[in-house]
Length: 562
Image (cartoon, rainbow, N blue to C red):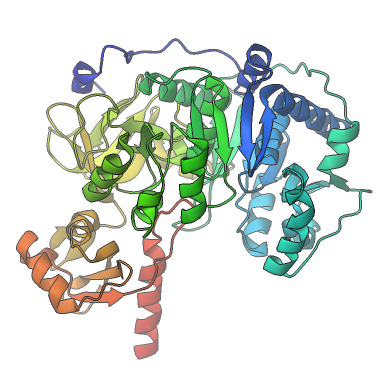
Protein backbone atom coordinates (compact mmCIF):
# COMPACT_ATOMS: atom_id res chain seq x y z
CA UNK A 1 0.00 0.00 0.00
CA UNK A 2 1.56 3.30 -1.10
CA UNK A 3 1.27 6.10 1.46
CA UNK A 4 1.94 9.84 1.18
CA UNK A 5 2.49 10.28 4.99
CA UNK A 6 1.56 13.99 5.15
CA UNK A 7 1.76 13.83 8.96
CA UNK A 8 5.57 13.74 8.92
CA UNK A 9 5.68 17.38 7.77
CA UNK A 10 4.03 18.41 11.04
CA UNK A 11 6.40 16.63 13.42
CA UNK A 12 8.44 18.99 15.62
CA UNK A 13 12.14 18.75 14.76
CA UNK A 14 12.72 16.98 18.10
CA UNK A 15 10.52 14.01 17.07
CA UNK A 16 12.28 11.59 14.71
CA UNK A 17 10.47 10.10 11.71
CA UNK A 18 12.17 6.79 12.46
CA UNK A 19 13.67 5.37 15.63
CA UNK A 20 16.70 3.16 16.08
CA UNK A 21 15.19 0.53 18.38
CA UNK A 22 17.04 -1.40 21.07
CA UNK A 23 17.09 -5.08 20.15
CA UNK A 24 16.57 -6.17 23.76
CA UNK A 25 13.86 -7.74 25.92
CA UNK A 26 11.68 -5.22 27.76
CA UNK A 27 12.98 -6.27 31.20
CA UNK A 28 16.49 -5.11 30.27
CA UNK A 29 15.43 -1.54 31.03
CA UNK A 30 14.92 -2.38 34.71
CA UNK A 31 18.37 -4.01 34.91
CA UNK A 32 19.99 -0.99 33.22
CA UNK A 33 18.22 1.66 35.29
CA UNK A 34 18.93 -0.20 38.55
CA UNK A 35 22.62 -0.01 37.75
CA UNK A 36 22.54 3.62 36.54
CA UNK A 37 20.24 4.96 39.31
CA UNK A 38 20.42 2.34 42.10
CA UNK A 39 19.40 4.67 44.95
CA UNK A 40 16.80 6.73 43.10
CA UNK A 41 13.19 6.23 44.17
CA UNK A 42 11.32 4.08 41.67
CA UNK A 43 7.98 3.74 43.47
CA UNK A 44 6.04 5.74 46.03
CA UNK A 45 3.20 3.64 47.42
CA UNK A 46 0.88 5.01 50.10
CA UNK A 47 3.73 6.60 52.03
CA UNK A 48 6.49 4.03 51.47
CA UNK A 49 9.23 4.31 48.85
CA UNK A 50 11.32 1.75 46.99
CA UNK A 51 14.49 2.33 44.97
CA UNK A 52 15.26 0.93 41.53
CA UNK A 53 17.84 -1.44 43.01
CA UNK A 54 15.26 -2.76 45.50
CA UNK A 55 12.68 -3.39 42.76
CA UNK A 56 15.32 -5.09 40.58
CA UNK A 57 16.60 -7.26 43.42
CA UNK A 58 13.12 -8.35 44.48
CA UNK A 59 12.19 -9.11 40.86
CA UNK A 60 15.26 -11.36 40.55
CA UNK A 61 14.42 -13.15 43.81
CA UNK A 62 10.92 -13.93 42.60
CA UNK A 63 12.22 -14.90 39.13
CA UNK A 64 14.64 -17.42 40.62
CA UNK A 65 11.92 -18.82 42.86
CA UNK A 66 9.55 -19.29 39.91
CA UNK A 67 12.28 -21.10 37.99
CA UNK A 68 12.95 -23.34 40.99
CA UNK A 69 9.24 -24.23 40.98
CA UNK A 70 9.42 -25.37 37.37
CA UNK A 71 8.85 -22.26 35.24
CA UNK A 72 10.51 -22.66 31.85
CA UNK A 73 10.81 -20.26 28.93
CA UNK A 74 7.43 -19.59 27.31
CA UNK A 75 5.31 -20.62 30.31
CA UNK A 76 2.45 -18.26 31.07
CA UNK A 77 2.14 -16.63 34.50
CA UNK A 78 -0.96 -14.66 35.49
CA UNK A 79 -0.64 -11.45 37.52
CA UNK A 80 -3.89 -10.52 39.24
CA UNK A 81 -3.09 -7.38 41.21
CA UNK A 82 -4.07 -3.71 41.48
CA UNK A 83 -1.35 -1.06 41.07
CA UNK A 84 1.15 -1.74 43.84
CA UNK A 85 4.90 -2.47 44.04
CA UNK A 86 4.19 -6.21 43.81
CA UNK A 87 2.58 -5.72 40.39
CA UNK A 88 5.81 -4.18 39.07
CA UNK A 89 8.04 -6.76 40.80
CA UNK A 90 5.90 -9.64 39.54
CA UNK A 91 5.77 -8.38 35.96
CA UNK A 92 9.53 -8.09 35.61
CA UNK A 93 10.17 -11.29 37.58
CA UNK A 94 8.13 -13.34 35.12
CA UNK A 95 10.04 -11.81 32.20
CA UNK A 96 13.46 -12.32 33.85
CA UNK A 97 12.51 -15.99 34.31
CA UNK A 98 11.65 -16.29 30.60
CA UNK A 99 7.90 -16.48 31.15
CA UNK A 100 5.00 -14.70 29.46
CA UNK A 101 2.93 -12.32 31.60
CA UNK A 102 -0.85 -12.77 31.51
CA UNK A 103 -2.37 -9.59 32.90
CA UNK A 104 -5.54 -10.43 34.81
CA UNK A 105 -8.17 -7.99 36.04
CA UNK A 106 -8.60 -8.25 39.85
CA UNK A 107 -12.31 -7.56 39.38
CA UNK A 108 -12.85 -10.74 37.36
CA UNK A 109 -15.53 -13.10 38.58
CA UNK A 110 -14.71 -16.80 39.02
CA UNK A 111 -16.20 -17.52 35.59
CA UNK A 112 -14.10 -14.83 33.84
CA UNK A 113 -10.97 -15.87 35.72
CA UNK A 114 -11.46 -19.54 34.87
CA UNK A 115 -11.86 -18.69 31.18
CA UNK A 116 -8.69 -16.60 31.01
CA UNK A 117 -6.55 -19.06 32.99
CA UNK A 118 -7.77 -21.94 30.83
CA UNK A 119 -7.37 -20.08 27.56
CA UNK A 120 -3.85 -18.87 28.39
CA UNK A 121 -2.77 -22.15 29.98
CA UNK A 122 -1.22 -20.23 32.89
CA UNK A 123 0.85 -22.46 35.19
CA UNK A 124 1.32 -19.95 38.00
CA UNK A 125 -0.40 -16.86 39.35
CA UNK A 126 0.63 -13.93 41.56
CA UNK A 127 -2.40 -12.53 43.37
CA UNK A 128 -3.65 -10.63 46.42
CA UNK A 129 -4.72 -12.26 49.67
CA UNK A 130 -8.32 -11.04 49.32
CA UNK A 131 -8.47 -12.60 45.84
CA UNK A 132 -6.95 -15.90 46.96
CA UNK A 133 -10.32 -17.60 47.74
CA UNK A 134 -11.53 -16.81 44.21
CA UNK A 135 -8.34 -18.21 42.65
CA UNK A 136 -8.46 -21.32 44.85
CA UNK A 137 -11.99 -22.15 43.70
CA UNK A 138 -11.02 -22.26 40.02
CA UNK A 139 -7.55 -23.78 40.40
CA UNK A 140 -8.65 -27.39 39.89
CA UNK A 141 -10.42 -26.43 36.65
CA UNK A 142 -7.26 -24.89 35.12
CA UNK A 143 -3.56 -25.65 34.53
CA UNK A 144 -2.51 -23.69 37.63
CA UNK A 145 0.23 -25.42 39.61
CA UNK A 146 1.36 -22.66 41.96
CA UNK A 147 -0.25 -19.63 43.62
CA UNK A 148 1.98 -16.85 44.97
CA UNK A 149 0.09 -14.61 47.40
CA UNK A 150 0.86 -11.09 48.59
CA UNK A 151 -1.02 -8.44 50.57
CA UNK A 152 -1.27 -4.66 50.42
CA UNK A 153 0.02 -4.45 54.00
CA UNK A 154 3.28 -6.16 53.00
CA UNK A 155 4.44 -3.02 51.20
CA UNK A 156 3.00 -0.36 53.51
CA UNK A 157 5.03 1.76 55.95
CA UNK A 158 4.71 1.39 59.70
CA UNK A 159 2.14 1.78 61.30
CA UNK A 160 -0.13 1.52 58.23
CA UNK A 161 0.97 -2.10 57.77
CA UNK A 162 -0.43 -2.96 61.22
CA UNK A 163 -3.66 -1.01 60.80
CA UNK A 164 -4.49 -2.12 57.25
CA UNK A 165 -5.68 -5.69 58.08
CA UNK A 166 -8.40 -4.18 60.31
CA UNK A 167 -9.45 -1.80 57.53
CA UNK A 168 -9.48 -4.74 55.11
CA UNK A 169 -11.64 -6.83 57.42
CA UNK A 170 -14.12 -3.97 57.76
CA UNK A 171 -14.13 -3.32 53.99
CA UNK A 172 -14.27 -6.90 52.71
CA UNK A 173 -15.48 -8.80 55.74
CA UNK A 174 -12.58 -11.24 55.57
CA UNK A 175 -9.02 -11.72 56.66
CA UNK A 176 -7.38 -14.36 54.50
CA UNK A 177 -4.73 -16.66 55.88
CA UNK A 178 -2.62 -18.52 53.34
CA UNK A 179 -0.45 -21.38 54.50
CA UNK A 180 3.05 -21.29 53.04
CA UNK A 181 3.20 -24.88 51.89
CA UNK A 182 2.66 -27.15 48.92
CA UNK A 183 1.48 -25.12 45.95
CA UNK A 184 0.73 -21.92 47.87
CA UNK A 185 3.56 -19.45 48.42
CA UNK A 186 3.90 -16.15 50.27
CA UNK A 187 5.73 -13.38 48.42
CA UNK A 188 7.10 -12.01 51.71
CA UNK A 189 8.84 -15.34 52.40
CA UNK A 190 10.22 -15.51 48.85
CA UNK A 191 11.70 -12.00 49.13
CA UNK A 192 13.03 -12.60 52.66
CA UNK A 193 14.91 -15.80 51.88
CA UNK A 194 15.38 -15.68 48.10
CA UNK A 195 18.51 -15.24 45.99
CA UNK A 196 18.89 -12.28 43.61
CA UNK A 197 21.25 -13.89 41.10
CA UNK A 198 20.91 -12.77 37.49
CA UNK A 199 19.31 -15.19 35.07
CA UNK A 200 20.66 -15.72 31.58
CA UNK A 201 17.86 -16.70 29.20
CA UNK A 202 18.16 -16.13 25.47
CA UNK A 203 15.27 -13.99 24.22
CA UNK A 204 14.52 -13.21 20.59
CA UNK A 205 12.76 -9.83 20.96
CA UNK A 206 11.11 -10.05 17.54
CA UNK A 207 9.62 -13.51 18.02
CA UNK A 208 9.34 -14.25 21.75
CA UNK A 209 6.20 -13.17 23.56
CA UNK A 210 6.40 -10.95 26.62
CA UNK A 211 2.68 -10.54 27.21
CA UNK A 212 -0.75 -12.00 26.65
CA UNK A 213 -3.05 -9.00 26.96
CA UNK A 214 -6.69 -10.02 26.95
CA UNK A 215 -9.02 -7.65 25.19
CA UNK A 216 -11.99 -6.33 27.12
CA UNK A 217 -14.40 -8.77 25.54
CA UNK A 218 -16.79 -6.04 24.37
CA UNK A 219 -17.91 -8.55 21.74
CA UNK A 220 -17.85 -12.29 22.44
CA UNK A 221 -15.14 -13.87 24.59
CA UNK A 222 -11.92 -11.97 25.36
CA UNK A 223 -9.00 -12.76 23.07
CA UNK A 224 -5.38 -13.01 24.16
CA UNK A 225 -3.36 -10.42 22.23
CA UNK A 226 0.17 -11.75 21.67
CA UNK A 227 2.68 -8.95 22.23
CA UNK A 228 6.39 -9.58 21.73
CA UNK A 229 9.31 -7.93 23.51
CA UNK A 230 9.89 -5.92 20.32
CA UNK A 231 6.27 -4.70 20.36
CA UNK A 232 6.59 -3.40 23.92
CA UNK A 233 10.09 -1.94 23.52
CA UNK A 234 9.14 -0.10 20.33
CA UNK A 235 5.92 1.41 21.72
CA UNK A 236 7.64 2.53 24.93
CA UNK A 237 10.45 4.15 22.93
CA UNK A 238 7.92 5.86 20.65
CA UNK A 239 6.24 7.26 23.76
CA UNK A 240 9.53 8.63 25.13
CA UNK A 241 10.38 10.28 21.80
CA UNK A 242 6.93 11.84 21.52
CA UNK A 243 7.33 13.31 25.01
CA UNK A 244 10.72 14.73 24.08
CA UNK A 245 10.79 17.43 26.75
CA UNK A 246 10.65 14.82 29.52
CA UNK A 247 14.09 14.18 31.00
CA UNK A 248 15.52 10.87 32.13
CA UNK A 249 15.79 10.61 35.89
CA UNK A 250 13.77 13.79 36.53
CA UNK A 251 10.10 12.94 35.99
CA UNK A 252 7.40 11.75 38.41
CA UNK A 253 4.52 9.78 36.91
CA UNK A 254 1.08 9.40 38.47
CA UNK A 255 0.19 5.71 38.16
CA UNK A 256 -3.57 5.35 38.40
CA UNK A 257 -4.15 3.67 35.05
CA UNK A 258 -4.14 -0.04 35.94
CA UNK A 259 -1.09 -2.03 34.90
CA UNK A 260 -3.28 -4.99 33.99
CA UNK A 261 -4.48 -2.79 31.13
CA UNK A 262 -1.92 -2.33 28.34
CA UNK A 263 -2.32 1.46 28.36
CA UNK A 264 -1.17 1.76 31.97
CA UNK A 265 1.49 -0.90 31.48
CA UNK A 266 3.17 1.00 28.61
CA UNK A 267 2.62 4.69 29.41
CA UNK A 268 3.16 4.41 33.16
CA UNK A 269 5.12 1.30 34.15
CA UNK A 270 7.39 0.55 31.19
CA UNK A 271 7.92 4.23 30.34
CA UNK A 272 8.78 5.06 33.96
CA UNK A 273 11.30 2.23 34.17
CA UNK A 274 12.89 3.20 30.85
CA UNK A 275 13.11 6.88 31.85
CA UNK A 276 14.12 6.27 35.50
CA UNK A 277 11.00 8.15 36.59
CA UNK A 278 9.40 7.86 40.01
CA UNK A 279 5.98 6.19 39.93
CA UNK A 280 3.30 7.30 42.39
CA UNK A 281 1.07 4.24 42.59
CA UNK A 282 -2.59 4.33 43.65
CA UNK A 283 -4.43 0.96 43.79
CA UNK A 284 -7.63 2.48 42.40
CA UNK A 285 -8.96 5.80 41.16
CA UNK A 286 -10.48 7.87 43.91
CA UNK A 287 -10.98 11.59 43.22
CA UNK A 288 -9.93 12.89 46.62
CA UNK A 289 -6.93 10.53 46.92
CA UNK A 290 -5.81 11.61 43.46
CA UNK A 291 -6.10 15.32 44.23
CA UNK A 292 -4.11 14.83 47.46
CA UNK A 293 -1.44 12.82 45.63
CA UNK A 294 -0.98 15.57 43.03
CA UNK A 295 -0.98 18.30 45.68
CA UNK A 296 1.53 16.55 47.98
CA UNK A 297 3.74 14.49 45.66
CA UNK A 298 3.94 16.79 42.62
CA UNK A 299 3.74 14.41 39.63
CA UNK A 300 4.83 15.88 36.30
CA UNK A 301 3.17 13.28 34.02
CA UNK A 302 -0.41 12.07 34.36
CA UNK A 303 -1.50 9.55 31.68
CA UNK A 304 -5.21 9.02 32.18
CA UNK A 305 -8.69 8.58 30.79
CA UNK A 306 -11.36 11.26 30.25
CA UNK A 307 -13.46 9.97 33.17
CA UNK A 308 -10.52 10.59 35.52
CA UNK A 309 -10.05 14.19 34.39
CA UNK A 310 -13.84 14.75 34.51
CA UNK A 311 -13.98 13.35 38.04
CA UNK A 312 -11.26 15.71 39.25
CA UNK A 313 -12.76 18.77 37.56
CA UNK A 314 -16.16 18.13 39.13
CA UNK A 315 -14.84 17.80 42.69
CA UNK A 316 -16.32 20.70 44.70
CA UNK A 317 -13.01 21.42 46.49
CA UNK A 318 -10.67 21.23 43.50
CA UNK A 319 -9.49 24.82 44.07
CA UNK A 320 -8.05 23.84 47.45
CA UNK A 321 -5.44 21.67 45.74
CA UNK A 322 -2.30 22.73 43.90
CA UNK A 323 -2.24 20.80 40.62
CA UNK A 324 0.37 22.97 38.91
CA UNK A 325 3.09 20.28 38.92
CA UNK A 326 1.23 18.37 36.16
CA UNK A 327 3.02 19.24 32.94
CA UNK A 328 2.00 16.56 30.43
CA UNK A 329 -1.00 14.27 30.04
CA UNK A 330 -1.96 11.96 27.19
CA UNK A 331 -5.59 10.87 27.46
CA UNK A 332 -6.75 7.56 26.04
CA UNK A 333 -9.44 4.84 26.22
CA UNK A 334 -12.24 7.17 25.06
CA UNK A 335 -12.85 10.48 23.28
CA UNK A 336 -11.57 13.54 25.17
CA UNK A 337 -14.23 16.28 25.26
CA UNK A 338 -12.90 19.73 24.37
CA UNK A 339 -14.40 21.32 27.48
CA UNK A 340 -12.53 18.85 29.71
CA UNK A 341 -9.25 19.51 27.91
CA UNK A 342 -9.57 23.27 28.24
CA UNK A 343 -10.65 23.24 31.90
CA UNK A 344 -7.92 20.81 32.97
CA UNK A 345 -5.21 22.82 31.21
CA UNK A 346 -6.48 26.02 32.82
CA UNK A 347 -6.31 24.52 36.32
CA UNK A 348 -2.93 22.75 35.97
CA UNK A 349 -1.14 25.00 33.48
CA UNK A 350 0.02 21.79 31.78
CA UNK A 351 -0.82 20.12 28.49
CA UNK A 352 -3.59 17.52 28.02
CA UNK A 353 -3.92 15.94 24.59
CA UNK A 354 -5.91 13.08 23.12
CA UNK A 355 -4.23 9.93 21.87
CA UNK A 356 -5.42 6.69 20.36
CA UNK A 357 -4.52 3.06 20.63
CA UNK A 358 -5.74 -0.47 21.18
CA UNK A 359 -4.45 -3.60 22.92
CA UNK A 360 -3.39 -5.05 19.57
CA UNK A 361 -0.95 -2.13 19.12
CA UNK A 362 0.80 -2.23 22.53
CA UNK A 363 -1.31 0.11 22.61
CA UNK A 364 -0.52 3.59 21.15
CA UNK A 365 -0.56 4.45 17.44
CA UNK A 366 -1.58 8.15 17.39
CA UNK A 367 -1.46 11.22 19.60
CA UNK A 368 -1.73 14.95 19.36
CA UNK A 369 1.42 16.98 19.86
CA UNK A 370 2.00 18.05 23.45
CA UNK A 371 4.23 20.94 22.41
CA UNK A 372 3.11 21.92 18.95
CA UNK A 373 0.05 22.18 16.74
CA UNK A 374 -2.83 20.09 17.99
CA UNK A 375 -6.25 19.72 16.47
CA UNK A 376 -9.25 19.55 18.77
CA UNK A 377 -11.44 16.54 18.10
CA UNK A 378 -8.58 14.71 16.39
CA UNK A 379 -6.65 11.72 17.76
CA UNK A 380 -3.57 13.43 16.31
CA UNK A 381 -0.76 12.16 14.13
CA UNK A 382 0.62 8.63 13.75
CA UNK A 383 3.66 8.01 15.95
CA UNK A 384 7.16 7.49 14.49
CA UNK A 385 7.45 4.35 12.33
CA UNK A 386 3.66 4.00 12.42
CA UNK A 387 1.70 3.97 9.18
CA UNK A 388 -2.03 4.63 9.10
CA UNK A 389 -4.64 4.52 6.33
CA UNK A 390 -8.39 4.85 5.94
CA UNK A 391 -9.82 1.90 4.01
CA UNK A 392 -13.10 1.48 2.17
CA UNK A 393 -15.42 -0.92 4.00
CA UNK A 394 -16.59 -2.25 0.63
CA UNK A 395 -13.32 -2.71 -1.27
CA UNK A 396 -10.60 -2.53 1.40
CA UNK A 397 -8.76 0.05 -0.73
CA UNK A 398 -7.40 3.37 0.64
CA UNK A 399 -9.88 6.25 0.54
CA UNK A 400 -9.23 9.87 -0.42
CA UNK A 401 -8.64 12.58 2.20
CA UNK A 402 -11.78 13.40 4.21
CA UNK A 403 -13.73 10.22 3.40
CA UNK A 404 -14.89 7.95 6.22
CA UNK A 405 -13.70 4.35 6.32
CA UNK A 406 -11.99 1.84 8.61
CA UNK A 407 -8.71 2.89 10.23
CA UNK A 408 -5.84 0.49 9.58
CA UNK A 409 -2.42 0.78 11.23
CA UNK A 410 1.00 -0.78 10.73
CA UNK A 411 4.23 -0.59 12.72
CA UNK A 412 6.65 -2.44 15.02
CA UNK A 413 4.17 -2.19 17.91
CA UNK A 414 1.49 -4.27 16.14
CA UNK A 415 0.72 -7.63 17.74
CA UNK A 416 1.87 -11.01 16.51
CA UNK A 417 -1.75 -12.21 16.53
CA UNK A 418 -4.41 -13.64 18.82
CA UNK A 419 -3.47 -16.52 21.11
CA UNK A 420 -4.69 -19.82 19.63
CA UNK A 421 -7.10 -18.02 17.29
CA UNK A 422 -5.63 -18.20 13.76
CA UNK A 423 -8.92 -17.38 12.01
CA UNK A 424 -9.49 -14.21 14.04
CA UNK A 425 -5.85 -13.25 13.53
CA UNK A 426 -6.24 -13.64 9.77
CA UNK A 427 -9.40 -11.50 9.81
CA UNK A 428 -7.70 -8.70 11.74
CA UNK A 429 -4.15 -8.69 10.35
CA UNK A 430 -3.71 -8.18 6.58
CA UNK A 431 -0.13 -8.05 5.24
CA UNK A 432 1.05 -6.56 8.53
CA UNK A 433 -1.82 -4.05 8.67
CA UNK A 434 -4.09 -4.13 11.72
CA UNK A 435 -7.76 -3.47 10.96
CA UNK A 436 -8.88 -1.54 14.02
CA UNK A 437 -12.66 -1.76 13.65
CA UNK A 438 -12.79 2.02 14.16
CA UNK A 439 -14.31 4.35 11.60
CA UNK A 440 -12.52 7.58 10.85
CA UNK A 441 -10.95 9.88 8.30
CA UNK A 442 -7.73 11.80 7.68
CA UNK A 443 -7.44 15.48 6.81
CA UNK A 444 -5.00 17.01 4.33
CA UNK A 445 -2.36 17.57 7.05
CA UNK A 446 -2.34 13.95 8.16
CA UNK A 447 -4.38 14.41 11.33
CA UNK A 448 -6.74 11.51 12.00
CA UNK A 449 -10.26 11.59 13.42
CA UNK A 450 -12.34 8.75 14.85
CA UNK A 451 -16.05 9.01 14.22
CA UNK A 452 -16.96 5.73 15.91
CA UNK A 453 -16.58 2.00 16.27
CA UNK A 454 -17.68 0.16 13.15
CA UNK A 455 -20.00 -1.93 15.29
CA UNK A 456 -21.40 1.09 17.16
CA UNK A 457 -22.56 2.99 14.08
CA UNK A 458 -26.32 3.53 14.19
CA UNK A 459 -28.35 3.12 11.00
CA UNK A 460 -31.69 4.85 11.50
CA UNK A 461 -34.08 5.29 8.61
CA UNK A 462 -31.20 4.63 6.19
CA UNK A 463 -28.96 7.31 7.69
CA UNK A 464 -25.55 6.56 9.20
CA UNK A 465 -25.27 8.15 12.66
CA UNK A 466 -22.03 8.20 14.63
CA UNK A 467 -22.70 8.15 18.40
CA UNK A 468 -19.55 10.13 19.19
CA UNK A 469 -20.81 13.15 17.26
CA UNK A 470 -24.07 13.21 19.23
CA UNK A 471 -22.24 12.64 22.54
CA UNK A 472 -19.93 15.59 21.91
CA UNK A 473 -22.94 17.88 21.48
CA UNK A 474 -24.68 16.63 24.65
CA UNK A 475 -21.45 17.03 26.58
CA UNK A 476 -21.42 20.75 25.74
CA UNK A 477 -24.60 21.24 27.76
CA UNK A 478 -23.67 22.96 31.02
CA UNK A 479 -25.63 20.49 33.19
CA UNK A 480 -24.29 17.28 31.63
CA UNK A 481 -21.34 15.46 33.20
CA UNK A 482 -21.37 12.35 30.99
CA UNK A 483 -23.38 11.15 28.02
CA UNK A 484 -23.36 8.03 25.89
CA UNK A 485 -25.49 7.33 22.84
CA UNK A 486 -26.54 3.94 21.49
CA UNK A 487 -28.73 2.57 18.74
CA UNK A 488 -31.71 0.62 20.07
CA UNK A 489 -34.18 -1.46 18.02
CA UNK A 490 -37.02 0.51 16.44
CA UNK A 491 -39.83 -1.11 14.38
CA UNK A 492 -40.05 1.83 11.99
CA UNK A 493 -36.50 3.24 11.63
CA UNK A 494 -34.66 -0.04 12.20
CA UNK A 495 -32.71 1.64 14.99
CA UNK A 496 -33.31 4.82 16.90
CA UNK A 497 -30.96 7.05 18.89
CA UNK A 498 -31.12 6.82 22.68
CA UNK A 499 -29.00 8.96 25.03
CA UNK A 500 -27.98 7.93 28.54
CA UNK A 501 -27.08 10.98 30.59
CA UNK A 502 -25.37 11.60 33.93
CA UNK A 503 -25.95 15.12 35.25
CA UNK A 504 -23.45 17.17 37.23
CA UNK A 505 -23.93 17.02 40.97
CA UNK A 506 -26.84 19.15 42.17
CA UNK A 507 -28.18 19.78 38.64
CA UNK A 508 -31.66 19.03 37.29
CA UNK A 509 -32.58 18.75 33.64
CA UNK A 510 -35.48 17.52 31.50
CA UNK A 511 -35.69 15.62 28.23
CA UNK A 512 -37.26 18.68 26.65
CA UNK A 513 -34.34 20.86 27.68
CA UNK A 514 -31.77 18.48 26.17
CA UNK A 515 -33.87 17.99 23.03
CA UNK A 516 -34.07 21.74 22.47
CA UNK A 517 -30.29 22.02 22.93
CA UNK A 518 -29.56 19.10 20.56
CA UNK A 519 -31.74 20.57 17.82
CA UNK A 520 -29.53 23.66 17.70
CA UNK A 521 -26.46 21.59 16.86
CA UNK A 522 -27.56 18.40 15.08
CA UNK A 523 -29.45 17.41 11.95
CA UNK A 524 -32.96 16.16 12.73
CA UNK A 525 -32.14 12.49 12.04
CA UNK A 526 -29.26 12.52 14.56
CA UNK A 527 -31.24 13.87 17.51
CA UNK A 528 -31.87 11.37 20.33
CA UNK A 529 -35.49 10.22 20.40
CA UNK A 530 -35.21 8.90 23.97
CA UNK A 531 -33.28 10.17 27.01
CA UNK A 532 -32.56 8.22 30.16
CA UNK A 533 -31.03 9.92 33.20
CA UNK A 534 -28.69 7.79 35.32
CA UNK A 535 -26.51 8.27 38.38
CA UNK A 536 -23.65 6.44 36.64
CA UNK A 537 -22.78 4.58 33.44
CA UNK A 538 -21.37 1.04 33.14
CA UNK A 539 -17.63 1.28 32.47
CA UNK A 540 -14.46 -0.72 32.11
CA UNK A 541 -11.74 -0.29 34.74
CA UNK A 542 -10.06 2.43 32.63
CA UNK A 543 -13.25 4.39 32.21
CA UNK A 544 -14.45 3.30 28.77
CA UNK A 545 -18.26 3.26 28.74
CA UNK A 546 -19.67 -0.20 28.01
CA UNK A 547 -22.16 0.70 25.32
CA UNK A 548 -22.91 -2.97 24.66
CA UNK A 549 -24.20 -3.38 28.25
CA UNK A 550 -26.73 -0.62 27.62
CA UNK A 551 -27.78 -2.17 24.29
CA UNK A 552 -28.19 -5.59 25.94
CA UNK A 553 -30.38 -4.00 28.63
CA UNK A 554 -32.63 -2.57 25.90
CA UNK A 555 -32.90 -5.96 24.20
CA UNK A 556 -33.90 -7.59 27.49
CA UNK A 557 -36.58 -4.93 28.01
CA UNK A 558 -37.99 -5.67 24.54
CA UNK A 559 -38.08 -9.41 25.24
CA UNK A 560 -40.18 -8.80 28.36
CA UNK A 561 -42.58 -6.52 26.47
CA UNK A 562 -42.98 -9.04 23.64
